Length: 375
Ligand code: SDX
Image (cartoon, rainbow, N blue to C red; front, side, top):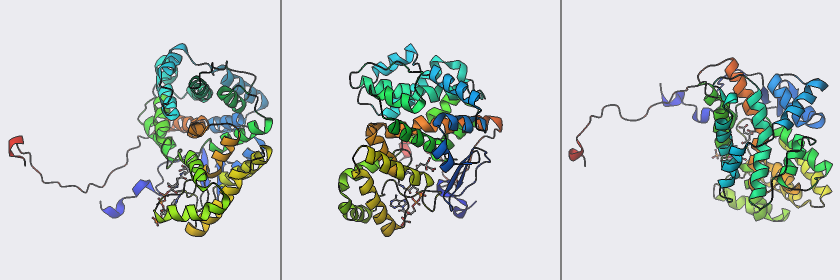
C-alpha cells in the first residue's frame, strides 16, 4: 500500500450500493427512490416523501393517511425523557439536546432498538418525536409550558406550533414542508454514512441516529446554515458583500453555504430554496436576506467559481418563519432523520461491516524501554 492509494475524506470512493437516493453531481439532479426532487418539492409533502424513502414507493391515499396518523400518535414525550429534558441546562446546544434525547429514548423504549431490527417502528418514533423534543426544550428555556401534541396538524405545522404558540401562515407552513422535503436525504453524506457505519456492526437504530446527530452538528455539514446567517449579519447590505467576501477569502476562510463535495454545479435544493426565500421574504415584507444572498452568490462565484449549496438560503427561510438560529441545524435533523433511518434499514437488509483501512506512515521498529530509561 502507498500514499497514492489514500483517498482522503473517502472522496469519490463508492462504498456501497443503494436504491434510496441518486445525486447527479455534474448535472445538478437529485432523486429520491427515482423521483426528481423538483417534482417532489413542487407537488408532494414531507409525510409522503418519508413514506417514499422508507418503503421505496409513493403511498396510496390510505397508506398516507395511516402513516400520518401513526406519526401524530408517536409525538408524545415519555415521562422519563421529560425528566431528563427538565434537567438539561437552558443554554445547552439544541443538537446536544436532540442527541441526548435519542440516546435516552432507547433506554425507555428498548423494544424498537433491538440490534438489526428491520422494523420501521423506530424510524416512525424518532421522526415523530424530534419536533416534540425541540419544541419542549425551546419552550422550557423561555419559561413556557409545553404544547400538547396536536394530531390535527401536519408534521411541518406541528413543528412550528411546538416551538411557539402561534398560528403560522399557510405559506410559512408550506415553506417549511418544502425545506423538510429537500433535507430528507442526500445519499452518503457524512451523517448518513456515520449512521450506516453504526448499523453495519448490527448496532441498533437509535445508536445509529445518535451517531448521525453528532456528525450533523459539525459546521462543515449541518452547521453551515446557521453560519450563513452570521455572515449575513456581517455583510448587512448587498453592496457590502464584495468587501466582506474578499476579506474572508484573503484569510483563507470558507464562505458558508457554498461548495459541495459532490455537486460541481448549483445544488438543485439551493435553486428551490432561493425561490422560497424570495416568496417568504415578500410575504413578510422583508427581502433583506434574499437580496444580500443574491449579491453574495455573485461575488463568491466570480471570486472562487463556487455554487450555492442547500445551506445558503435555508436559514433565511427559517428566520422569516420564526425558527431561531440555534434551531436551524436541529431543523435539518428533524428532516434528515428520515434519510438516516431509511439507510439504516437498507443496511440491515444487505449488511456488510463497513471497515476501510488506513495507510500506516509511522515507525515499525521501536522497542520497549523501562520508564527510568526514558528521556
Ligand atoms: C451539506 O455531503 C453532503 O451531501 C452534505 C449535504 C447534505 O445534504 O447532507 O449536502 C449538506 O453539508 C452541505 C455543505 C455545507 N457546508 C458548507 O457550506 C461549508 C462550506 N463549504 C465547504 O467547507 C466545502 O465546500 C465542503 C466541505 C462542503 C466540501 O469541501 P470539499 O469537497 O472537501 O472541497 P475542498 O475542501 O477540497 O475545497 C476545494 C477547493 C479549496 O480551494 P484550494 O484550497 O484548493 O485553493 O475549494 C475551496 C477550498 O478552499 N472551497 C471553498 C469553499 N468550499 C471549497 N473556498 C471558500 N469557501 C467555500 N465554501
